[in-house]
Amino acid sequence: MERLATTYLGMELKNPIIVGSSPLTSSLDKLKKCEDAGAGAVVVKSIFEEQIDHDAAKMISQSEGFVVHADGQDFLEEVSRDYYIDAYLSLVDKATEALDIPVIASVNCRTRGSWLDYVQRFAEVGADALELNYYTLPSDFNRSAQDIEEEYLAVVQEARNRFKLPLSVKMGSQFTALANVIKKFDTMGVDGLVLFNRFYQPDIDIEKLATKSSIVLSGPNDYAQSLQWTALVSAYLNCDICASTGIHSGESLIKLLLSGAKAVQVCSAVMKGGHKVIGDMLQTLSAWMDRHNADSFVDFRGKLAHKRMEDPSQWERAQYMKSLNVEF
Ligand SMILES: Cc1cc2nc3c(=O)[nH]c(=O)nc-3n(C[C@H](O)[C@H](O)[C@H](O)COP(=O)(O)O)c2cc1C
Image: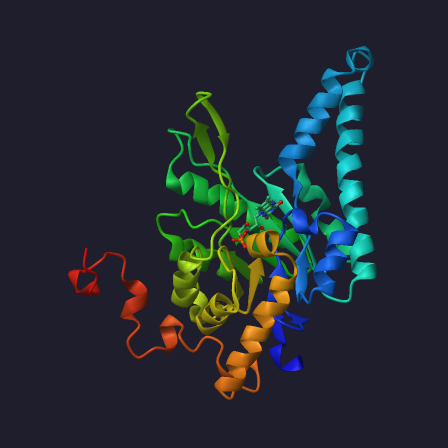
């Protein structure tokens, strides 16, 4: 299926389906399974800054006898931190050896912390690119939007300065001036933006009167926001757009490509339907290309992006109008 080939972050992908960072990509066997199912690339399950800190703290709290010694706490923090990082780097290392498709490492971070010190190590173990998943819940009453954005931009800028290979930012959509933030990432030289991450949201168990996990998997109609924003920004940027969230079928994949995405990430669709979903989606794409006499992607990618349309106003609509022809 060479005609399905695309480029993303300067890498050659045999097709535009990337299995996103998730339990589907947390071990070598699982990564290999994604490749065998036909994925064009994989993003390894993230290493979490939060997880590293938590485990360091736990080890320290269980080792009171040890930490009374001078430097004991520092030592344990380092040992714990290195343990998880080394395990992660080893997974990335083995994956890049074993897989023929690009392997993208992923860091989930929430501060401008020590993870930045080892960011170049992902490149050293052979990761083809790094995806940065930075997010803090804007729940602090005393922090302004500007404050939060400046911090976000500073973190990405620092990662950009330190990491010499392709870098992408997997972002959420909750910014007051989303296009402006996207443009700033583009200007600072990130190679790609993943639009959008889907964050965990707690729910309530009304019988136990307690919080509980909400549904974590997306549904097949959840691609709309990614579609709109890919269309709105893709043709105005230097960096690549990778669409993410709610892409469950070949049809939604085609829509995202028409709106200008270079690639898409899938998780929930594979978690629900199994790895064969990847092949099904590629087949739908291929059949669609046949029907439209498209020899390759370039023939149609971004055809319906905002910049390329004679009347792009549909992409800008935010409010419903009575002319929607729906009767209730
Ligand atoms: C159980 C689960 C674990 C996930 N873990 C990560 C993670 O470690 N890092 C990350 O960047 N995204 C993670 N995600 C988010 C997915 O990569 C993806 O962005 C999200 O599920 C939306 O895509 P989808 O609609 O195809 O599922 C996770 C998603 C799920 C459901």
